[in-house]
Amino acid sequence: MTMSAKPFSSVWTREPKGRREQGLSRDQIVRAALELLDEEGLDALSMRKLGARIGAGATSLYWHVANKDELLELAMDEVYREVPKPVGASWRETAGAIAWGLRGAILAHPWCVRLIGVLPGIGPNALVMSDLLVKACKKAGFQGIDIDFAVGAVVAYALGSAVPEAAWRGMLNRSGDSPCEAQTEMMPTIEGLAAGHPDLLERYKDYIASGVDPLTGRQIAFDYGLVALLDGLDARRGGQAGGQSGSRGTKDGGAPRVSEMRP
Image 1 (cartoon, one colour):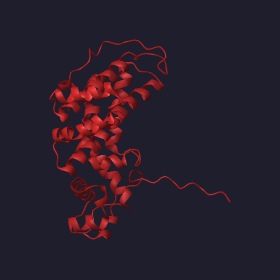
Image 2: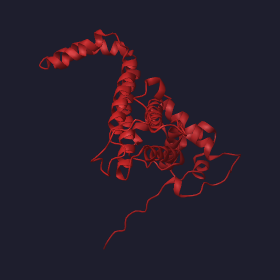
Image 3: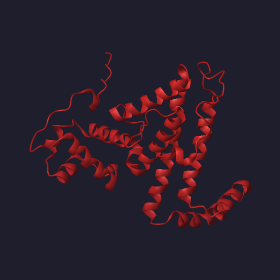
Image 4: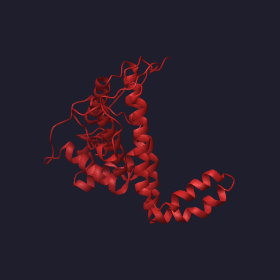
């Protein structure tokens, strides 16, 4: 007997129900869920705990969201709402603002790290963000599948950089150390483990000796990688599908500075 696949289900595939029970609304539930997630993390969220927080029974919550996964979909889309969505900007300005905005939103809501790639990003705010990137890339001269590759590269870079930084910041919060203190405390361990890698050890020591604040250093590193990525994509604008014959475009100007890209 052939088993049928479980149909796709999402909070975005059904119409939200109206107000009920003393004016409790879905927006109110989502705001309270965001506050709870930001304060206590993903594992702390339950329908019962959320209901107690807003003075409503779990049954009242289920009138607006069918289950916890639907609630998390709604919360994730509120995270995407915080990403700047510039209109009328060049493709580099658009890509830069969205990349910086994604990084900032993830660092502000580190609980969402465990949901990226697990819950579908098909809410209205996520779709507006993706559509802006697609439109900006098309206007810049990307063609065919190159549009998807360029959009994917920007999003993947932002997420791939922000996720480990969110984990690092979480480690700092749990330890109570400042970034500089944690870096200094790690030095004896690094010296021992990297003794057979002198070039790597030299870079680590030079970085500490530079006196750059680790938080600032991570911003600089993110900007360096982002500008390098956009430079590389710029060189492929207007090429054939697959990026086999790209040509460098200059109508959007040179590499933007940090202050021009950061939201």
